[in-house]
Image: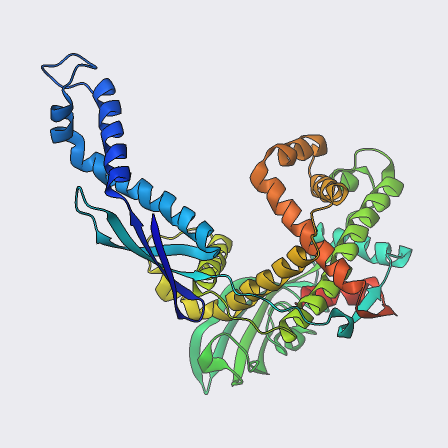
Length: 437
């Protein structure tokens, strides 16, 4: 096999490969003989079809299969020989596919860049510390009670925390705008689900009352024509309802899967969930700082093929969030590459840097941490043991957990060398900050 490698630009390489005709013809011959033993052709007994007949009937298709297989195997052997690591799939251009002559083709592809690691001891990281207090648990219990609240109509003015049934019409410069009108809309005052000033304008209104509320749309509002615009809403209150919170008793606890142990067990499980949430948020806060530092202190070329793959991953994730693949629109027109370019570049760059840290320090996924992560995931399901077994026997899921654990180990490796300042904070601050990311 003849191999020639050249650098065309940056990370792009062009590989010219020649495979002896004898190798190709021998494999075609073997495939034809194998086919002759298995094919059924009218007029011949199975296994007794002459090779010439098989070649006439199936020769072109078999040769095409063989050429594809030979190209695939020879490309892998060639990059091994030249000690290059392709990033993404190659573009194959045949040069010669003539029967009886050497098979020649050109493969164009990108390679992984070399990454020179920065001095990790220069990194400065703030490591936040917090714990879930009884007061935090009290607050969470109240939140859960509000989620299970029922509503009773009252004959009084609306206040924060009440639910109002309203009709409203929005106008800008006296003209109604799209999406600014609704009837019998249910709204909890203080929920901040409407633009600033809207809910506040309803406080104090009673059923049957109408009021015009002046508002200003946020500068980052999704509709371009309303960004930063002054508008008015004519609001009519149809009904005011106040929340009836459920009592802390068996029926309430059962809605959260707590069958025994009463309020004590309920609070215990609420705290366990909050502890998990807090631990993950604290870890995420540190991880973001570390990853930002890696991006800021490294410059590397990024293979276009890897970025293109990551863009597609991000696009598919967004489609799934909006209900999966849609057939009635052009996905790339609605979700163009430019929407995901920056994030895809960041992800690929981080992947290259993290990969080099793993390689340079010979890091491997810690088996105990992998098991612990699987058990943590499983603890959120009704049958944890079955979930643990499922993850342990599913190579794809297991590989995902191992990758996450390895990334955590990279963060720990960096923290062991960086300048780390510990800062005390509280549950609310960490959870709010994490939600805003």
